Length: 281
Image (cartoon, rainbow, N blue to C red; front, side):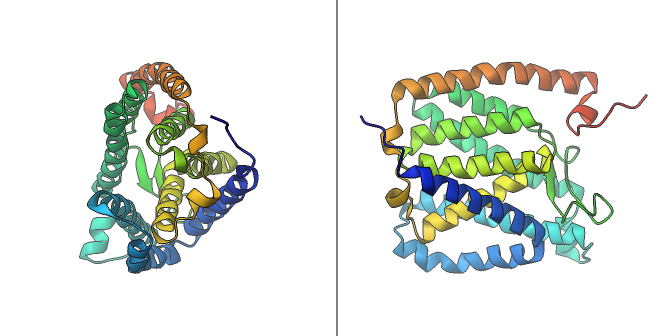
């Protein structure tokens, strides 16, 4: 099958740049972010008209947007030190396990789907990504005004490492390549935006919050006005040999990272290596 990339030379870079703007905007304007994502639920009539059918698609959209709203509210709770029963729950350190669980389940869902499609090496990579998520609340936090005040806006911070971020990106891209080739191009844009933004900021720990906003924006756009099959159809890019090799490479790269991750935890070095701090004497 002929692979046609020229229609995407413009559409993909433009979408990528828009996504970078979305990350920066929602990260900085944390209050507006809460209002926007809460109000986004009111667009459900567009989801119906846009062809969102079946309980799985609805659950998928809601399982991303609802946690995004909770992320936004938790950012307000911590950054502004809001008082009240609900606010106190949202800013409690143990509540960070909720975000850990959402990330874990998001990866696990795709991992199971990968396995059912026969993409076994990539599925194993996804499982090991679950294993190597830094634990909450020790390696998760929402920054307040006393922490990096000039660089943060109540960020949801997860101290993932740059290699973990890369492995997540290439694993997820391989999954979408197998599961929905038609959406591979647009999904690659949201994955690369979440990958590149922390690199630009030189803060790998911003990867998860970047991923939250790019994924939520993408699913909302697809649900309300799915233009991607028209402007970014990449179904012709699919090749089963490429899929197998890609999954295998992901697994080969994942195994040494797993050992490194476990060694950091075992030796007590994780406190410094995950947070990228110098060891104290």
